[in-house]
Amino acid sequence: MELKPVNELSYNEAISQLGQIINAMQAENCDIDKLAAYTRRATELITECRRRLTATDEELAQILKTLDRTGA
Amino acid sequence: MHESISLFELNSRIARLITGDTGTQNVWVTAELSDVAVRRGHCYMELLQKDGNGTQVAKARGVIWGNNYDRLSREFMIATGQPFATGIKLMVKASATMHPVFGLSLVITDLDPNYTMGDLLRRRREIIDRLTKEGVIDMNRELPWPAIPQRVAVISAPGAAGYGDFINQLLHNPSRLKFEPRLFPAVMQGDKAAASIVEALNEINAQGGWDCVVIIRGGGATSDLQCFEDYNLALNIAQFDIPVIIGIGHERDITLLDYVANMRVKTPTAAAEWLIGLGEKALGDLDAKAQLIFTTVSDIIAGCKEQLSYYAGLLPVVPFDATRRAELRLNRAGVLLSGVSANKLSPARARLDVMAANVAAASSQAVARSRDRLAAAEQLLAALSPQAVLNRGYSITRVNGKVVTSSSQLTKGDHIETTFASGTIQSEVK
Image 1 (cartoon, helix red, strand yellow):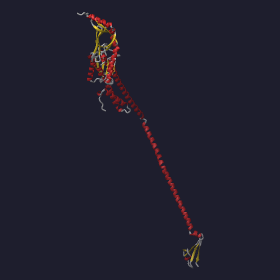
Image 2: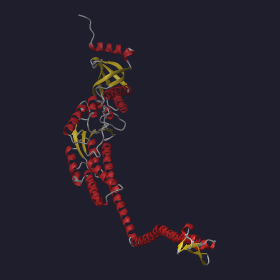
Image 3: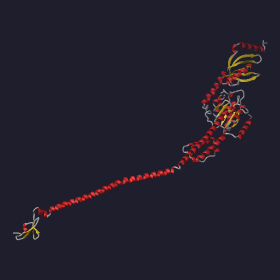
Image 4: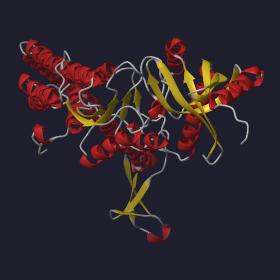
C-alpha cells in the first residue's frame, strides 16, 4: 500500500488511518513482519495530529500579536 | 374685543380638569416606548400606540422623575433583561399632568415588567414558530462539530473586554492547543446590531475555511439583548453552514439566538473553554491511541517471545521425542507386519497341510483299493482256476493233448488222458 506522507492527510484521514492500523495490529492474524512498519506509521500519525492540535511558542506569540493589533 | 384669559390661566384650568378627573390619575396604560432620553437623572420618552398596520393612533409624552427612575429602570432590567429602549412594549402606571410651561405629559410612577416580558416572549415565540415552519430552526443546531474547531471566526465588538477575555482564554490554554481565531468586527448593541452581525456572517461565509463562529458580546454593564430578538439575524444563524456558538448573554439571559445557534454559552470565557474542551478531548483520544498502540505492540512482541521461548524450550526434547516416536512406529510396524504375515500365511499353510494329508489319504486309499481289487481278482482267479474246478470233482479229458469238450470229438480206439484234481489216468475209447 502506497502511503501518503502524514502532512498531506487531513486530520480526520489521519485519525481514521490510525484507527485502521490499531485494528490491524489487534487482529488475530496480525502480520508480525509489518509490526515495525505499523508502529512507525502510527507514531508518525499521532505526532502529526498532536502537532496540528498544539501550537509552538512561536505560533502562540504570533497569534497574540494579532490580538494586540485588534486593540483588546 | 372678546374677554380673554392668559395662556397660563388656560393651562391652569386644563391642569385642574385633568387632575380632578380620577380617570386620568394612576391608571395602568399599555404603550410602545420611543425616543427615550435621560436628562439630569430624569427619563423622558414618547409613548405610542400603533394599529395593526403600524400607523400611530395615539401619542403622549411621558416622564419618569429621577427619584423613581433609578429604581424602576434597575428593576425593569433585572426582570426583563433589557434596558428601557425604543421599541419595547410597556405597561406603566401613569398620571396625566399639565404643566403650564411644558404642557401635557404622563408622569410614570410604576412599571409592570411582566407585560414587557410577555410581549417579548410572545414575539420571540412568533419568530421561533416561523423559523420552525420554514424548517430552518434546527439546521445549525444539528451540524456536527469538526474533531477540533481550530479556525475560529469571532464576531464581536473590536476592543471589547469580552473579546479579549475570549482570546486570552483560548490562546493560553494549558494543553497548548492551537487555535486560529480572527475577529470579524460588528456592532453588538442597539438597532444596528442585527444587520451588522449578519454582515459579519456573510463575510465569514464568503471567506470560507472557518471551523466555527463564535458570537460574543463586548461585555459592559448593560445587557441590552433586545437587538438580538431579530428574525433575519436568527434566520442567518440557523442557516449558517458551520456551527455557531452564542455567548452574548449573562447567566440567566436567554435570547432568540440561543434557540437557533448550535451552542449556547454564558460568557465569552465559557465559549473559549468549550472549544478548549473539544481540543483536549481530541488530544486525550490521541494519547489513548498512542497508549493502545504501545500496549498492543508490547503484547504482540511479548506473545511472540513467549512462543519463541516455548519453541526454544522444546528444542532439546523434540529430536529425542521424534526418534523415540520413530522407533516406536518402526516397532509397531514390525509387529503389525508379522501379524499381517501370520494372518496371511497360516491359512495357506493350513491349506497346504490339509492338501498333503489329503494326498496321503488319497494315495493310501488308492493303494488299498488296488490291493482289494487284486485280492478279489486273486479270489476270482482262484475260483476260476482248473484246479479249483477239479477240486470240486470235475476232470479234464484231453486227446492228443487237446481238451475234449464233446464226445463227438472222440472215435473208438482213441487214447484219452483224464486229469483229476490229483493224478492222471490213461484210457481207451471203446
